[in-house]
Length: 469
Image 1 (cartoon, helix red, strand yellow):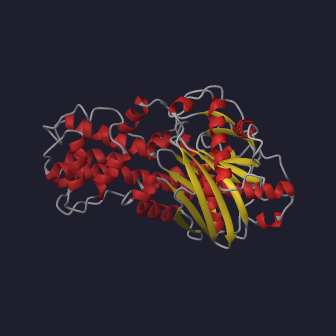
Image 2 (image 1 turned 180 degrees about the vertical axis):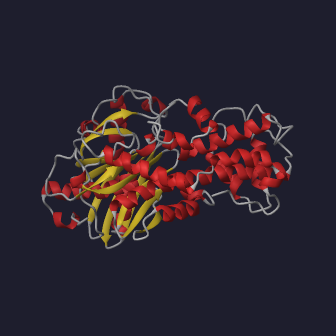
């Protein structure tokens, strides 16, 4: 799919050098089919005991083996742990399709985030204690679920060791420790409250569970922001690593597909700009699929291409290069702004260039910039469509809903349309699907998980939480 042509300019005619460079970012339908097949192969390998460690799509077990059906009732707590902030939630399910949430955002001081791991969880426990007292539920043995945005190695629903923080966190002594246990120990310092930490899930699984409560055919979660990840519902008989309840039928699998391509699977569509971005990143050779689709990487690719064309004297010939020459200076907000201008209008594009001290640009140059952005964002949607289609075709269900979160999908003017188009192209026509935005819903999903786990543990209304695949 080529980028949409502006009403005033034809790329092949008006900026042929730009058009030629952008052709490097246009995969064919055969390319997308190949990506889908390679993804499916890596998923199959990732689910096996023998191939799990070698697969670039390791398919990690979430240990979530039940799905909600919309009839769950009660109130549960959730803790969202994100790179930039945390949120404590009280979620009440009072009637069918009716959910009430009350929440408190917690900004963690830098001194805490950069201190000891125990200080991080002591800080969170203190805020949870304050929150449940404010809501007058401190004595009710409240189940709590954690939605966790950092990398974990899970060994049970309520056991996951921290692999790494993101750059916003530098707390020492937590890597390799069980996050659930750290929070439990911190909460134990507040004997006046009764909170039972039931488990931990990632953001994609939380989004899936939240939508599944409202739309029971939900079988996939998709995160498209600065990180790229997905989860889906798999038959437990295909999960070789699972050694739990033999009567369970399904499990949510965290694909962890950001690393797809680390073994060279995507080299056939990588171009010189992809390789430059990868080589100059802090993770060269790693997270290749995410570098095709993550928000930060899309904007960085645009910056690299624009800078190359400026050095060639093709666009913004007299423009300053010092600001545009700074790595990661271009962000996804800027890319979205550029593409949000109506055809033939370049007001927002010029405003973005003003931030880079490139002023008084010609309409032709701004049209070329818009074309570059559209081409790169279109490719991202097409490559993600290959992954989504691989999962849909694996599940072989007649109809599913897909929970989607992330700024690219929600805010970009064309991304959702392109993703939907190419997913339909690649999916078996017998299988229908619907993308559903689930903004900031992972906490609701964590609360649902806590409720299901609590029912299983204490054998209360367990049947409400069982669903056939």
